[in-house]
Length: 374
Image 1 (cartoon, rainbow, N blue to C red):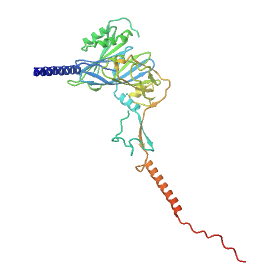
Image 2 (cartoon, one colour; image 1 turned 90 degrees about the horizontal axis):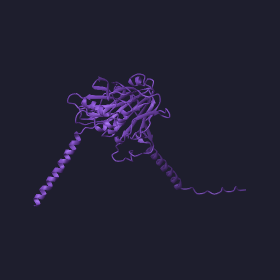
Image 3 (tube, one colour; image 1 turned 60 degrees about the vertical axis):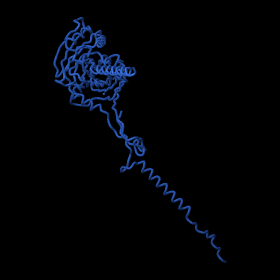
Image 4 (tube, rainbow, N blue to C red; image 1 turned 135 degrees about the vertical axis):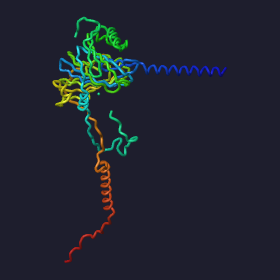
């Protein structure tokens, strides 16, 4: 009887382990979508996630341009993503060199800062193994439920520009084109549908047998708008934390109007563009002030809307400075140690002189000279 009970317990334990394993495998193959600028949907039962999004936004007071580059990971061989825009957009390929230039311009400045007294990591205050830690990017009239404004091929991308008055109809269009729209996304599109926004739908397929990984080719969108806006609302459906890097070109220093559910946006660079040639100079013409903004979204479901950008109170320039602290030395010897050694030497010498004076024998007093004889 006891043997039968032991066999039954082992069987239940094995069943539980197999069930948990099946659950984990199911999570591995379940699709995921994430995109700081819209919604990314895999074209099959695979995973895709956007770990980093960088965009250069140019606004001249009436027209906005967004050059967007996504860094993705996963095992999907084809994906699509949807980006809402407030007005009809034109789409073309962006120049990857643009991001190299803005990275160079906005990179932190490294400077050396010397200190006299030893700090943690300097001899003799070496902590642990002495390794240095790392320092902490209009209203439209009534029309069909979904309208295809235009379709085009841009390098590896297939781009469709759409209008939609019904999220369900947009769902059907995507489904007919081979991409099922998650039900939660259909609901998230409702605010854009109510405001009569339009959509840029992009499809991308990797080379045969390959997965989409790393930085994708940038896309360049242009549309008219009364205020600079960066679409973020759909990112609340992301399954992983999101990281956003915005480089804003305008006539003045710019800033987000609110956090929209993320951590506090941080300005990492602000200054005028001085480049004369290259893609950055070309894009910055007429909008010479560049502001770099970074923001993290650890809980994407808290994202409450789109980023509306506004002019900052002042055009104060700013650039991050990373200091490398070094101990001041002379010929490789810490200056403080030389100073202490010289001080001790001087003190010892002074003490020796004083001691020598105290121990030197005194000559006997000869007394007054004898009086002269008369």
